[in-house]
Length: 373
Image (tube, rainbow, N blue to C red; front, side, top):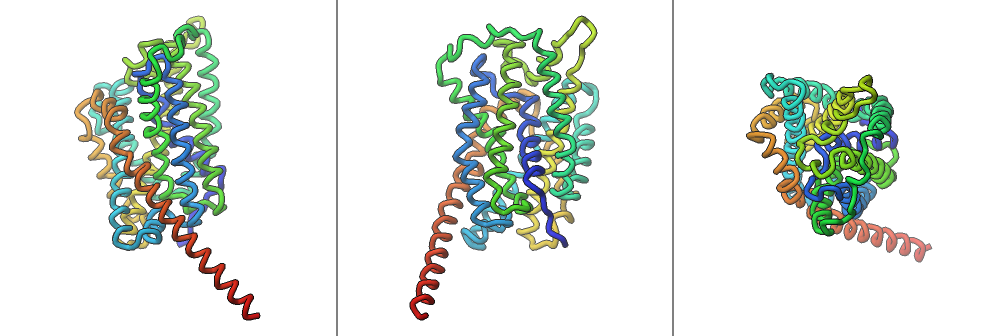
């Protein structure tokens, strides 16, 4: 089977869509109140070191995915164990994102409809995308993302009359501690979730481009999230943390002369597209992990099974929307820390040591060859 390839532009678009999708609608934790925009910046700054680590690992092993790298770095047995960990993480993350979508649809679009209906609808679309592969998903994202940017720009401009700049003051009025706490939540969700891209970035056409892709993608996404958070605060004030979907609530208040109203459907489209990309990537990564564990010919053969299980798990993962928000901002950052930070750091250190030994061995061999001549 021909190896999939994506160019840098497609990879960057995938990253941006992955990050902004559910985050734009769910928002950042509201405990820092009017300083929530500082929390999103803090989360990005915290993420920079781990993004360097992710990109460095991929650069050391070009055109290898996370699961191949695990075997090369820590051996077959330990590699299988960590592969299980990341496979389960990708599966769980995809289920969480699907449930976010289900709660949103139940809250606003289809309150009388059983949640399983929107979950199945979105899950089926993601199954199709995951089976088509990262190459097709990358091209699709590249086509749609300019439209997403245009929607976001228009919404920001239309929101200008509703903004109350005083809602942003005082800066750090509650001290820096709430900002740091919410910043760590923003680090884990969404920035460090990009660790799952190590499972698909073996498809990068340019082997030395992971660093460029990671940073351009995450910087653009962080800027969009920060600007959106500023808008939400300037519209909702200290009530920001009381809404489950603050972006939707903020945009629903836009009214221009009783003519331009009810434009929150545009934000819904951005959210739905982001959920589609994020869930599809998670399905692919979970599939590739199982492919390596079971020595299958292709992950595509098990995507349907993974997708069905993901839908069913998303249905039972929470009892209600309050649990969803509690998990996202209070529990998830600590649950995800081993997969997002501890394991990548260990893999990176061992990979650097092994590559240094290999370079030294080749250097000594070249020196001996020169001496013999």
